[in-house]
Length: 349
Picture 1 (spheres, rainbow, N blue to C red):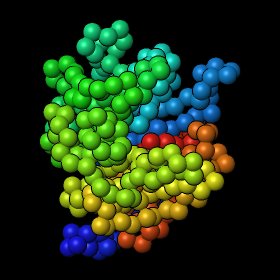
Picture 2: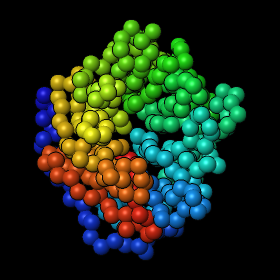
Picture 3: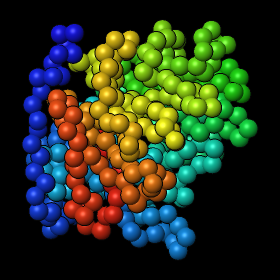
Picture 4: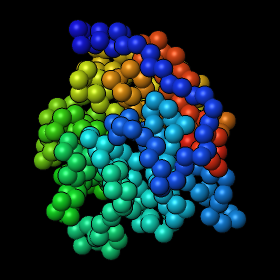
């Protein structure tokens, strides 16, 4: 409990949200002094690709300590989906949800943005497939040489697997091969350089009900995560589980979106340790709160919020920040501070 007690001693980080500046946006402006203070997010714009198409979305970097300082990284030829930093914050990986870069039954084409060089990188076919490297839910290994991900299950199947792609070798492989058409094993977070937390329903292998497991990077199950806060049941009896897990190795805590059943299934921001002996809930489920990430020195948590009446609409989402000690929640940045944006999504620090 000594380590857990640290969290209560953290003071509020003051973030200035004064007047919004719109004169600093552009590729030739140096807007952020320290790379470690970057926050990546997706800005949604009012413009659409076509009359009936999706809204234009762009990947944006903002300064954590003054988020009105920002830089737009992509143009309207991309639709960035959930950008994730390397541990040293030198690169960002994101899936591109633009129809030009989406492979049916696989997911979104992966792009990597180099923060220092302002360049993009993508990769060719994965193990002889017919599409560029595609998938969902990517996150980096510790040294930034590769990333873990999964894919959409194929038609008439629930099968999913844990995959890894090495960007130095430009080669990828399955870490876990599904044993049947209905088995699903998906990566959730990196616990340490040799250990993943995954969600698995492959009871033929585990001998246990669906749930979260620790797995080594070679695909071997290590132990079940018997934490009652990570799993629940809907009123109909359907299994509902934690989403968007972010692990803090120093405090040994999981930050996640906890599923709760009210009239509908909604998500609230919660923190727990692996065995569930520590638990704190920060939001109530009054809104749909997703994609939480730890802020600097775990003093704050940044996350995406959507009012329930607009839960299926991208144009009503915004980025919030909460104080870990007090639980105070407020806007991190107004969409109006990014010229032309009407909504903000997918924060990462």
